[in-house]
Length: 386
Ligand SMILES: Nc1ncnc2c1ncn2[C@@H]1O[C@H](COP(=O)(O)OP(=O)(O)OP(=O)(O)O)[C@@H](O)[C@H]1O
Ligand SMILES: [Mg+2]
Image (cartoon, rainbow, N blue to C red; front, side, top):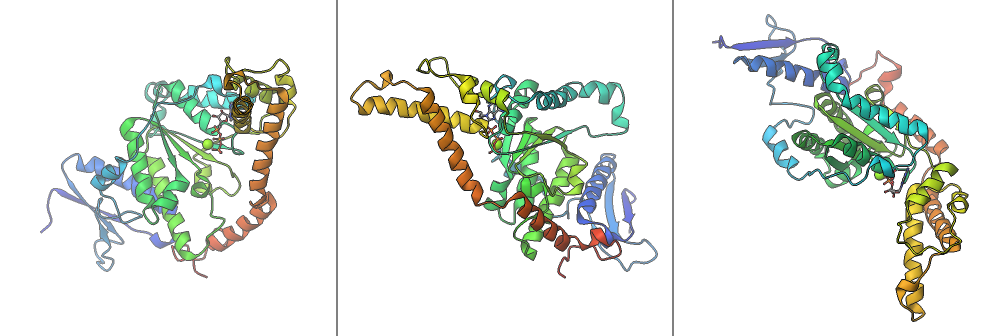
């Protein structure tokens, strides 16, 4: 007997031809619709397949029974989310030195968030976009201020920041990634925090390495889960990546990208300046104009050079049997430390692929991963073996 208080929704169509990521978004939306119906006291049953005369597609699912990962238990996610904590932002815009256009882009994003309630609620933008959210991706070389900027945005908005590293999730929770991702979004929503997902390259892009089927599967689940999370999340998400080539199209349309370049001479001068605490015993010959001439150095290396030369100055005095407080940092000390830091980075970069090599690999992988993108008529399911 059919429960008069229950509603059955039949979903038909060529479901297996729908890409997994679109399917994930669809599932989220339908879950939201079901929530609405359930709030009116009715029970909802979702039936995938033609209905009701032909009963030969019995794939029935309820809201909590299935999702991309087979896990949709609120309590499990809530529990997992307990391990993620937000923190007070550590930096502000005062500390961030970026070219003017980057600063403008960042401030525009912040300002847009500040007027969000006016334009969405009072001016009715909600009618065309019911879930206002801000998704940014900071991309650029390491040590150029991406993390600092995420803190600065949170600080400016008076929000806490929840920092998660995607690379960490992937390596620590093998196979559990989608659940952890969900828990992270849950925690950010719970604390109304700005969510910062660092090292998100492989999450947003098509995979460059580990192209065996298992890994493909894992990354696909993560990407689908991310789309769901982004759909549902009401807040600010900032990704940080070093690589920008090869983004998944589904993310590209949802995310605003902001590029963090290596600092030019003007920015370098300012960054050096900001990294000299007033009490630092600098010798008279230290000139930020001279230091700014050191090219191809990022903000982090500047900071490290200051720390390194300061330590050396104190140690040098100590080794000479003097009070370490009598140590002094010269221009040459800073220049040498800067060169050392640059050399360290260049050494590690040698082990990475060149941009040309990366482009070549990504092209091959894209081809291997998505035959259906170039030929629409082909099967486009989970089975990527060919
Ligand atoms: N644009 C900048 N303005 C001021 N300081 C900077 C800037 N970039 C880097 N720094 C200094 O270097 C430190 C590290 O920078 P940050 O962690 O923001 O780099 P990142 O771009 O997030 O690097 P990664 O990609 O390796 O995570 C900052 O805390 C700051 O001291
Ligand atoms: Mg960072």
